[in-house]
Image (cartoon, rainbow, N blue to C red; front, side, top):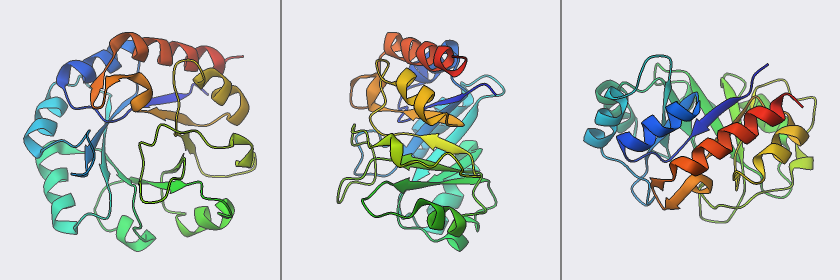
Length: 208
């Protein structure tokens, strides 16, 4: 199966189109004000409207109010919701959109138990853990902690870059990889060359 690739933290249409040109399957829009990659509804709607067909638009939220999520979904046209905070499974399922759940790989986390809790998710995104930071740390975690027997699709995130994504794909064999800071020139501003190299390395490793 061909690996899927998501470029997250998009803040400009030109970066979204660079991701699509490189072969990305999805772009991520962050709706979390503390993040340097946070976008407004107007920004996100413009980016989404500029996308060609068959590209998934993912909205990332961290402990957001239900009304805010509904407004973003309605006005931007989000295809998939990514929950990156402390949201429970029932809350994740209550927004009339398919969703994925981010799990930060804290020491002692029982991944099998957590995946059972979020069994209705379309997939589980695994990210590095740093206290007080819900994502975007730029740090990797020990990929050997991911069992090969997991039944849900795994989206691997956390510190991925053009120079390590091939190793990640070969070792973990995830359903998808997710990158943000690893393909940037500055927070929220993507580097088209880095995106192209990241996608190429992930695709090549997928068939090795």
